Amino acid sequence: MAVLDIVKYGNPILRKACKPVSDFSALPRIVADMFDTMYEAEGIGLAANQVGLDMNLCIIDVTHTEEADEPLTFVNGKIVDSWGESIHSEGCLSIPEVELEVKRPEFIRFRFQTPDGEEHVEEFGGLLARAIQHEMDHLNGIMIIDRVSPLIKMQYNKQLKEIAKNASRHVKERKPQGNFAL
Image 1 (cartoon, rainbow, N blue to C red):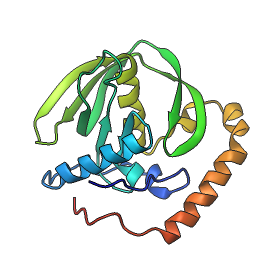
Image 2 (image 1 turned 180 degrees about the vertical axis):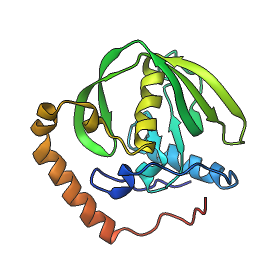
Image 3 (image 1 turned 60 degrees about the vertical axis):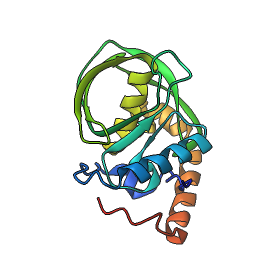
C-alpha cells in the first residue's frame, strides 16, 4: 500500500464538512493507505480529509489499550448522544507539535457503517470515545484549536500561522494522491 501526505492546518479541506460515502467499492484500498499513513506518522486516528479526501471516513487504532482489540474503521459516522466530561491532552497529525488540553464528553453513542456498509450503533468511552470525537470533529471541519479558549489559541498563533503558510505552499505543489471517485 502507500503512505499518503497528511494535510496540514490551513488547508481548506480541513474546514469543510465531508460528504457521506455512497460507493464503498474503493474503500479497501483507501483504508489500507490511511492505516499505512497513520502508522508512519505514529498517530492513533486519521480522518479522510486529513489525507485530502472529501468523505466521511476515519480510522482508529487504540489496540495498545484494553479498549479495542483491533484497528477500527468508521464510515458515515455520527455521534447521536454523549454524556460525562473529561479533559485530556490531544495532539493532531494536521497540527504538528501542538498539544492542547481539550474538554470532551467521556462517553458517546455512535452510529456508523463498516467498510462493507453494515450499520451499527454502539457506545464507547475513554480514549476510544475521545479518538472518535476528535476524528468526527475533523470530518465536520472542526479542529482541536477550535476547542480551546481564545487566550490559549493566541498562545499558539505564531506556530499556527507558520503551519498554515507551509500548508498553502504545499497545496500549490501537491500532486493528487489518487483517483478516488466517491
